[in-house]
Image 1 (cartoon, rainbow, N blue to C red):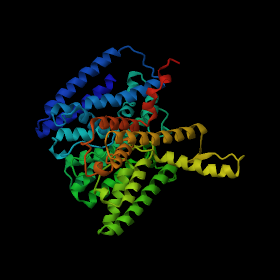
Image 2: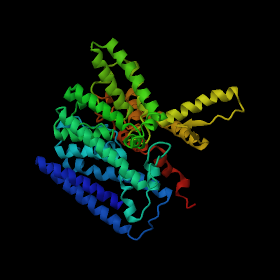
Image 3: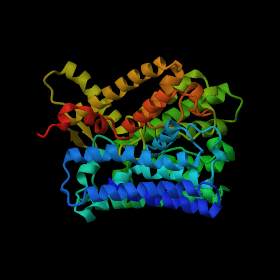
Image 4: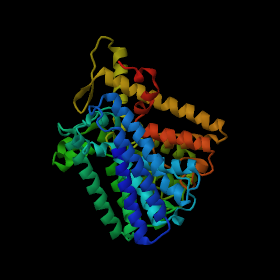
Length: 473
């Protein structure tokens, strides 16, 4: 934990450098935050000196959960100390929203923030997107610590694909693709007329599928079809399993194209985009291209839990709100930076359901569930069913709690689905045209917890609340 906090210190100092370049008044808050984080980091290193370096599976789950909370607690310091977000609840909410790559905000005038804090908001999403803990897998072996337990706890999805026998090598390859995609997007955005600072921040938010923008109006501010299409394409790419993207990089095109999860993801995006575009064209006085572009951008943005906006979809017909809620719940691919249930689980659930109909007709038949020609074990099927059940139950209970706190039904449902799915915008008065600043403080803490739950795939966090987890054997 001490080592992780020192990494966060380095990130904070990068943002201090941005403050120095622009000569703005948030430099002191970054330096204070870096000093506090460094002191605590070194103290933890001293306490842990000489300790057992072999990690158990339980250790991995604790490290991942605690590191996300610690990163958010220390990461909120620049916002709080600078006075731009003077409320601790709001500062923690904004930071957790960043590190969990959710993108929900309590800010009502984003442009008023200095460049250093805007850069910090975007950087939290870029680092949190693929996982700061996953990143350190490539570094922890230096200390004699194995990374597989952390990878198992942090990696998203029911299966954790390793493209190399050594998990550290896998981490480095995936981070190389992640950084490469980010760099290419920065260049393309600059070519589209966006300045270099905004290009970097939006590239961070796109590849991290977070959705924090440097503008209150989000991507709609630029009013550029080129920028919207470029971000749509790169957001779609960021929603693909990074181990599958590695296949494409390594020239294994056939295996890439025939991946079952990728087929589901692509088909879902196409179907919802066409449906919403047709509805918009017939209900709004806009061109067919504009209807297609708005639909494509919003579907991909919410499918991948990015949350950028080019239009206020609350002005669309209510049936399209329902369509977008479905998109938000499904999510994109496992092994990506996205949230939601994930397409691979939808593939498995669909095939399990299909098999049940066959079982009714042929009770003695052996009908294995196959994904990418590999048989999915009954235990993995049970895990997927349990995850989906828990996901939906948590949404129902949390929505009721939010309503009990005085929040309207539409806003409660929207913020809960958005938070646990790490989406960003919600519905109603918490939609893409509004911030979440008016929510009660208790609601913000609940939603922050849901962001953590969704980012770490429920079980990683909920395990810590089970008595059996803390027993010695």
